[in-house]
Picture 1 (spheres, rainbow, N blue to C red):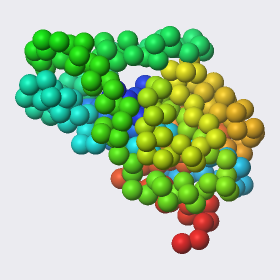
Picture 2: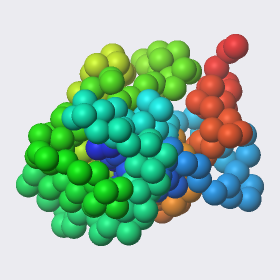
Picture 3: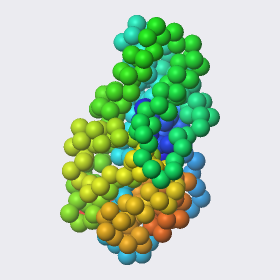
Length: 276
């Protein structure tokens, strides 16, 4: 899912970054949200093998939300928990539904190739305010609610790592250059660090910092440049057909088509002919 969490990830994503988890084919991007963790439509011909071919890659990039991370319980549950801390009881389902609706209709932050001045925080505030209005959430102190929610998505309280991720990254580390490409925001760095995943990646490319969202080739090309690897020698791993699969291929890379209903990152190791 683009990878964005503030449900942040990225991704927007990415994410992929609170949103992408919400309608997972909004994410993606994580990442959250309509269940930002909704699934994406399948594409014909996307096999368990991930549809990559050719030589073994020198580098592998990963989407965040929906690929490495997912939101604990879904975005509605996270919003409901924070609302509860403010003395309000709201059904997680109604919050998740509202999030998904707003996520799909709210205009994304503008991208001009430059870092977002506020790391997209203002955009997330607008989204949360719209979700509160959609659900009739009567918040005496919206600012405090938003700041609490926003901060939560920079911690492990809002996220969990897919079970196979640590072993897969450990197997790949040292054999391939690894990076993250996410439609999230800067909170992703804190999340990766908290889970101990940052140690595996040479670089983390985030849309709010780069000024480009997937599937814009710019963010993929920048990752290849930072890794020092030719585009054709890089595989991108993600769960979003448009942002990850089509985006990576349009940028001259190959794409491993992650579809968690049919495969997992362990299939990436199989494709790379890792033992076991």
